[in-house]
Amino acid sequence: MVSTVMSSSWPKACAVSAISLPDRGTLADYNRKVLALTPYSDAIKMNPNVPIGSPIPRVVGGSSPIKHVFYIIRENRTYDSILGDLKAGNGDPTLNLFGAIITPNAHALASQFVLFDNFYVDADVSYDGHAFSTGAYATDVVQKLWQTYYGNRGGIYLAEGEGFMRNPFGNLSAPESGYIWDYAARAGVSVRSYGEFVANVSKTAAGDVVTRESVPGLKNAVAPTFAAFDLSITDQKRADNWLQEFNGFIQNNNLPQLSIIHLGNDHTQGTTPGMPTPRAMIADNDLALGRVVDAIANSVFWKDSAVFVVEDDAQSGPDHVDSHRSVALVASPFAKRSFVDHTFYSTSGMLRSMELILGLPPMSQYDAAATPMFNAFQATPDLSVYKRSTPNVALDEKNPPNAVGATASRSMDFSDADLTPEEPLNEIIWHSVKGPNVPMPPPRHSVFVRPVK
Image 1: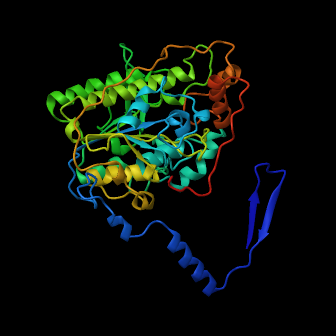
Image 2 (image 1 turned 135 degrees about the horizontal axis):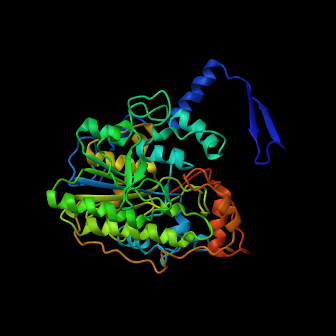
Image 3 (image 1 turned 120 degrees about the horizontal axis):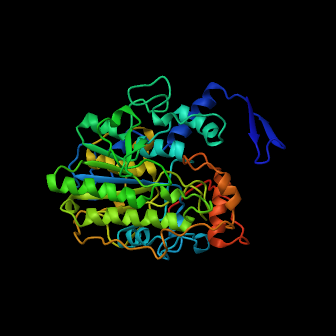
């Protein structure tokens, strides 16, 4: 057996190892060791170590006082870049780019509810990020094609449902049994999607975007004027459209059990001249988040709701622990207050938490094996509400023509989250905040992730 390892300087250097093929007994011993180290087993699907009275049930079908789940998906930030300035968590303030002045709502939610400083996204980029965020799995097709698509070498975004060889849940990129909305439909759980797996079709005379579902499972479940990814549309506009529907649900008492909301403007447009600055776009995203949580918390639905917030990926940004460590937030009467949770969590663990609340089975071995967020929730609800904060930065602040990285930003394709080069855009955003003379540290990749003591 020959193993080839390519260095970061490939094709200049590589290493080739010759490994003897093990005999049957040795191979069986290897298999036993792998199984012993694998976190998944049928036994842990039963979640034996669940706090008494947990609002997240121990098993699928268990009772939960939480009846409405709001799942907010954002774009591309690491923990340190947003929350690294919070002293209560394991953060590095020198890597903080968008602190409390720019993201007061993220900071308030993390401080008033639960600060997660050991949370990691399962994905690398948005292509597999949205697959993991909604299906706890990225198919073989996604894993093999995202590099081609991301590198702008002719790949197509099959997750949009416009590809070939469709299966009942989309196409080659879709998991075999579908996404979370497909599981919800089979369980009789109502779903509404705001911009997630949605395509923008046209604009109305009033300037609203007309949208449609991009996978079959969301047919008749899409908010028709909530824009999908389009950085020319502010997240304030998205919040306006969501609030309009939400107020209707309040009046008619027909709020869906699962609402999936995509707020993606924290992706930024780099320093493209005339476009909002990175900090303005991050602030726009943060204020939209605050408005959504504020509306839920001050509604009749707050008493039995839970809000989960995740980044689809961290885009290999600066972080002193790992480039996959990211921002996770929760808000609920059943979430602990002013609590720091060092538990190792992942995207799939957040999904597993929502699945158990809604009575859905795990969608893959990733979420079946992941740790649900039991430690972040409490049995006795605290009905005190959340009030949004306003960022201390102008949302219409524009990049000047001579901004650091302006020329490079102008040449980038921001029509999709995965058409901009990862490292150059990260560096542009870094220098837009830190200045041109402060070098950006390289992405950090930890071999082992351990809970903070």
